[in-house]
Image (tube, rainbow, N blue to C red; front, top):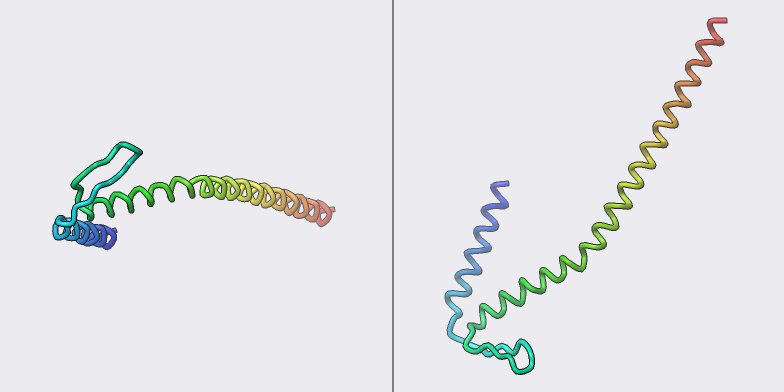
Length: 103
C-alpha cells in the first residue's frame, strides 16, 4: 500500500516537472471547426491528450470486464450447486450404508 502511494507521488512529481520545464513551446489547439484555443503549453496538451485517451480506453474495456465478471458469477454459482448436489448424494450414500450395516 505504501509502496503504491510512493510510486504515485513519484509519477506525479515527474509530470509536474515535465510541465514546469516545458512551458515555452506554445501551440494552438483546434477543437472544432471554427473553435481554436491559442497559446497553450505543449506539455499540457500532451498530458490532457494522454488522460483523455486513457479514459476512453477504460470506458471501452469496461463492458468486457462486466461481461467476464457476470460469467464468473454464473460459473461460481453453477459450481456451488454441483458441490451441493454431490454433498447430498454423498450424504445419501452414507445414510444408506448406515442403514444396511445396522440391519
